[in-house]
Image 1: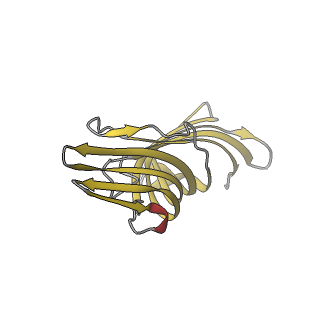
Image 2 (image 1 turned 45 degrees about the horizontal axis):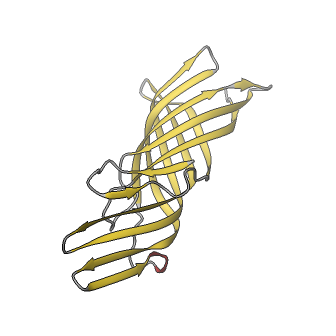
Amino acid sequence: MNTFYTFDRNLDFSKPKNLVNFGYSVSISMDDFKIGKLPLRISLILNNYRGDFHGGFSLAGGGTSTNATINKYDIGLDVYPVHVTFKKNFQVSIGGELNALLYDDIEGYQDTWGGPNFKRFNLADKTIRIDCAFTLGMVWRVAYTIALKNNWYIVPQYRFCWGLTNDFKNIEIGIKSIRNYLEVGVKKKFK
């Protein structure tokens, strides 16, 4: 589930039209990857998330406004320097993420006006690129490991991603994303 947000209260920003926007993720991860004595969890993740927003600002002489619906695909690297296991099965991980944009599908428009001049740009024709190529964020993960047999496990988990950098450029608002993932993993322990 994804939602876009901004901390800039001086701009006209409305919440997404769809309160919940679903997507998916597929990942491969490694627990207890060690750098020195520091055990890390690392994940390579393919994300799909969606959202929409309206935002802009206006002054006495003009302004700008953007309305967009976005469907993004990115590849990310999550690194969890805090990776703690409790009672053998319960894990809590805290770390960071770096995402690189693979593909986007954007519908909407951007309007600018000043005095008698008005321009509308269709975002779908990619005249104005608004998606950032890279984003950074914080990631929290809670998981529970359920043993099967022969060192195989099922791992239900919740992952929360809080974007620290803007998801978009060339627009008037610094918009970031908050993503919630409910996931089920399959784990194999190698000895």
